[in-house]
Image (cartoon, rainbow over all chains, first blue to last red; front, side):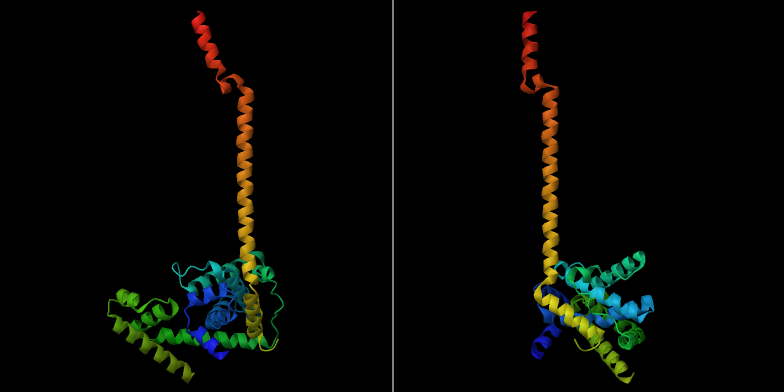
Length: 189
Length: 78
């Protein structure tokens, strides 16, 4: 079972979402684990309330599950697509004065509730995301741009090289150095 | 279910993904779109038929071309 999960962890977001559309539970898990910190961090920053952030996160991933079959990788990155869903969920919640639960209701998935002991986990995940964001901001500009383009925007090395005006090999080195600095920084925190 | 909120959420949504519950929703929406399209088409056809029927009722001769024949006959008679 772990080898299946490891396989999925190496898949691109587009492959994972195609898998989700094909009823692949492990593809969903890999996609969920990959993007959970980003969504939790985003929701905590926007609301300042860990309980609300957990509830919104649940709705975001339920909505992503419902919409997975319609994801078009040529239009935008999966991270951008997911953040777009998060913005819609938050906007709908603000307009209606209650947390959006339409996707969960449609799926019949409203049984998972936030307990008091979960709030610390929410804050821990958000803090980890903040730490990564701070470390990214501290990288030299060329490495930060390359890492962001590769990891967040999921662009190819060829595309990154063209936009930075350097060779593909230099782009790879910048991404590699940037990621190494991030790993080292996270390990010392 | 064990684990924290996010583990429980992963297990629940993953289970739904395995059962294809999310795809039922997509299929349902597609079905509703097709039904709405058929309804709209039917309304347009009914309106077109009703309009044609009212025009024929209003101008029965012109609909059959008899008015033109009558005018030609009158002209010849003169």
